[in-house]
Length: 89
Image 1: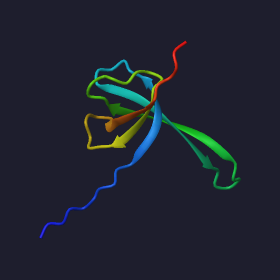
Image 2 (image 1 turned 180 degrees about the vertical axis):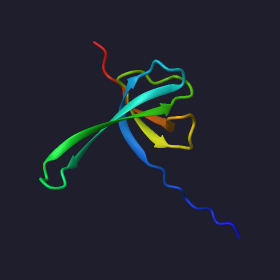
Image 3 (image 1 turned 45 degrees about the vertical axis):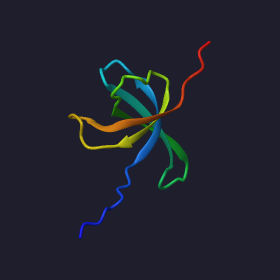
């Protein structure tokens, strides 16, 4: 009997830093973590390449990315939804 297992995929919130590639966005995720020894909080940034099928997200957009199967050599994430778009002057 096959049981359906719910697969929990990792989700992160970041800012689109590059939209120059076709169907790919570079999303920078910033995390705050405590130093193991000193306890001081540090911020670390990581860049992820995320798939954007319709080329709808632009640089500066705050988006949520979700883990997916490997889509290319270094694309392992998909842009799931827009959280906020920057206000234009």
